[in-house]
Every structure is written in structure tokens, then in C-alpha cells.
Length: 384
Image (cartoon, rainbow, N blue to C red; front, side, top):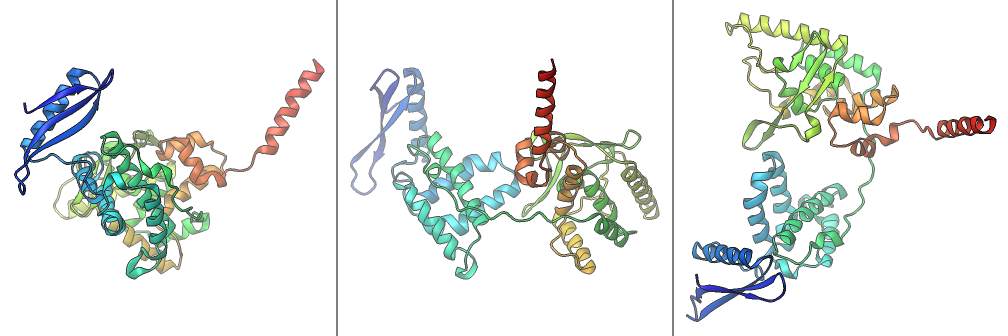
């Protein structure tokens, strides 16, 4: 092995190794690296660096640019740790908002001020054809850089994550659009007899996500017990459709459904079986999709959203998307007095804190009730 380990402290070492001759000058090149741990671990790290160099994969962290590091982060971490749809979104952000502005900068020379300048520039002219970019989009870029540079610090490429020193622009709160009870009835009547009707009924009645509904199989339903088991989701990206695990561990859940929805699903299953028999496809097996295309194949999530948008346009209901049905379900639960913990579990949020951050304004102010409870407690103390 062309290198050696030199102790610098109790658990710190300097790794020195030969990386070969310079192709221009022919002079021998030596690379140094710092390492914290035991001597044995330092020797293993040195062997790894030497092997990387021999394979032509060694990167000099002092010269690596932002674009080069993000490309490596994409290949070595993101590709194997995030979904295809998320990776697609990440790559779009990098291509549009990061590489054109700070991609050529060296990672070790990047400072908080550079990110602050980047965010300001994106807000002014980061949109299409030099138009302004929304604060929400800039925040999306910040979250990605925060995550990426966090790995850079962990991997020893930089001393610290500079994104932790910068605050993204505040995102204005937008009102959550929901359907009123009257509008729900109007929509369901309008969709009567169409394939969209049972899906809309299910989303309104359970608060499930679009992908969760489209991944549902008949074996996940126990209509006799009025129970639905959500265990997977359908994702659409440029590479096509794929089934995946739910968004979070809490997304894997049991959801109780109302007698009305049970009746809707029974009618839907009967109609589905009749249609298959008329087409000569035979009865649908238990593991077939609940909301499938005519031949049993999955429905594309984006196509479903587009069909729903057309239905809303024909009814002249503005600002309502397919995801609004989830918001509608949650608002109904909160209006009926359901507590935040139960609501959070039912809709599959990672924690009640997320539910509160999105829907906290819908919960009735019970501060006066709290005062009444304390008054009653102290009244009992005074009479004892």
C-alpha cells in the first residue's frame, strides 16, 4: 500500500498516500487526509482511499464543485434512498435553480452569503423567462440544499452545513380549499355512473392520498367489518408507474369507513365484475386493484387528477383539486370535534404536529373552556 498513517492526536490521524504522477509535469503527487477514530480504522480508511484512487474514483474534496458534489450525492445517496418521483423533483431543482448559479463554486469555498444571494436572485428572476419565482419554490431549493450539504458535512467534504446558517424566504399562508357539504352532494350526483364516482367517494370518505387509493386491492378491504387496510401507494414518474411503501411508517394504517361508503364500494365491485364478465375477462381475483382501468391495470395518478379537474370545470367549482378531497375529509373530522391525535392517525401523518401545522386554524378555540375547567377544579378545592 503506497501510503502511511501518522498519529496527530489521541484519536486523530493524518493519512498520506501517493496518487501517481501528474500527467502534465510528471511529478509525484501526494494526497493528505484527516481521520478521527482508532488506528485500525484509520488504516482501513487509507486502504479505501488508495483503492479508490487505483480505480480512478478518488475526488479531491478541496477542488470539488457544488455541481460535482451534487452529482455524486445523487448517484451515491439519493438514487437509492428516495422515491423516483422525489428524485425527479430534486433533479429539476438542481438543474433550474442550483447549477446555473452556484454549480461552479467549490464546495469548501461556499459560504452562507452565497446562498442568501442565490435565494434573493431566484425570488427576483428565477422563474421562467426571468420572471419572479415563488417563495415556496425557493424554499424547496433551500430544503434540498440543506439536505445535500448536510451529507457533505457528514462525509467530511466540508466542515459544516452552510445551509443551516441561512433562512429561506417566508412562504405566505394560503387558504386550504375544501368542498362544502352541499358541493360534495353536487359533485357526487354529477359523477353518478362514471368511473370517477367511487374514487371520489373513497377519497372524501377516508381522507386517503390519491396514490394510496389507486394502489388499493380488494384483499385490503373487509367490507363486512367496514375496514380498509392501507399498505402501499402508486407513484407516477417519468420512468412510469410503480407501487411503493406508504409515505411514512404511520401511513400504513387501518381506516374505518361509514356504511354509506361500504355501500358505494359494494356497488362498485358488482359493477366491476359485470364489466369484466361482459368483456370476457372473468371475475376479478381478490388481489386485483379496487380502482383499476377496464382491463385491471393501474390508473395513472396524473390522468385521474386531470379528469377530476375537468369535472370541476364543468361544475364551475374553482380552486378544488383531487387533493382538496383529503382536506375536505379532515375539515369534517375537526368540525365534528375529533381530536388531533385521532385525526392524524386516520389520515396517515407522520406526527400530530404536522396535522396541527396544516389544519390548526380549523380547531375551535377552547381556551375559554380550559378556564372553566380550572375554575371548577379550584371551586372543589375551596369547598373541601
